[in-house]
Each structure stands twice: as structure tokens, then as C-alpha cells.
Image (tube, rainbow, N blue to C red; front, side, top):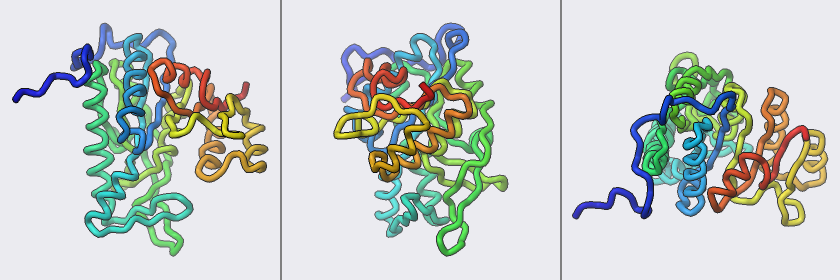
Length: 286
């Protein structure tokens, strides 16, 4: 039995390369979009994001897609009898787990996104931070002082991202980096998204979340300034992992990003509104 070329009626034919001229709109700064493993695994949540990226590609507006995949890594690890460790909400990756991280994040998770984008007509290239030594990092120590295979970003070299974007491709970046010796390191996907956005002078960084933004009284805060972030943390409105994300957003704004947006989308039009900060929570100076 021959499988249909596309499971979405009327879907565009996959393109093997960039569009005419392979150039972005004049003066357009890239947008970095970060999705987590839960979004990537949920077709209903992922589809509007990928189609939204396709809409941007159709007008040659450059986009970099950054992804994690911690849940899938955890699942594979447990199948092999390796119980994941976390300290302060950060995965402490062991030497035994690192090959699984590379296999899942740099392999199945990454290529699945590339295939889905390509099937919607978006030229895309799957990479990790190791490609072109684009993202260098250093290993962190666990609470016992031992070095781990979890890393913190020390430098981003944007040349590969810039070349792919200028050629009309969407880079799909898995959150893996390397140290100066060439060893692989697992990086928190939020962190790598922030660092890449700063390095490529992105116009905006968009976090696709499970919620409609930073919630206050059950409703998303539409806009918040750097000065208001600490006030909302002190008030208990911003909690848990959102504290680190919000503080990192404030730091990123100081490097020239126009805005960081956190929120969910259920349609292509909502994705476009997230990018511009019309919906979700917009963290900016205005």
C-alpha cells in the first residue's frame, strides 16, 4: 500500500531548498522560537507553530527554531535502567546518559521537526550547537563537586545560523553544545534559546508554552517591564521555573532584543500575534 504524500489535504509540496533569491526581507531581524518536548509531542499544539513558521518563510522572514525534549530523554533513560537526576530543576546529565541525549535531541526529536517543517513547504536544516562549533559551553558540577555532562553556555558563534538564514533555511537547533575539547554537553533549552537570540541580534524570542503567558489571577499579564518582573516575583505571581526565565529575559533585553514573549497558540494567526507580542505575556521596555 502506498502512503499518501501528505496527511493534510491541500498541504504544500515539500521544498528542497530556499525560495527565490534565498533572501530575507530587507532589514528583517530573525525571530527565535523555542518549543519544549511536550509541545513537540502534541500534534495539535505543534501544528500551528510549524505553519506559523511557514507563513514567515513565505515572506522570507527569518526564524530559528530551538527545541528541547527532556521527557523523551527521561523515557529512554528509564528503559535502560538509568534514573534521571535533577538539582534545582536542572537535569544533571551523566556520562552514561549523554549518548542518549545526543540520540534523542540531536537525532529523533530534531529530524522529526525538520521533516514536519519540510512537509509543510519550509526549507529547514537540523543542527546542534556542535555544528560549526556554534555553541560552546562548560560542564557544571553537581552538589558533590563532580563534573557532569550538563553545561552552561560560554559562547555562541552565529556564523552558521546567519548563513543558513541568508540562504532561506530555518535552522532547527537541538539543545546540545560542546566544550573546548569537543565533548558533548546537554544544555537547558531555554538557556540556549536566550544565548542564540542575543548572538544573532534577534528582534524577538518567543517561548511556546502550555499556558497563555505569565498568569495573574488566572489571566495572562499582557505586558511587563524589567522593573515590574522583580515586583511580581516578590508578590508570588511569577513562580518556579518562570522566575529564571523572566530574569533571563530581563538580561536579554539589555543586549538589544526588542521583546521576549511567553504564551500558547492554537492557530497560525495566534502564532503571528505571539511573535509581535499582541497576545501572551510580552516582556519589554515598553
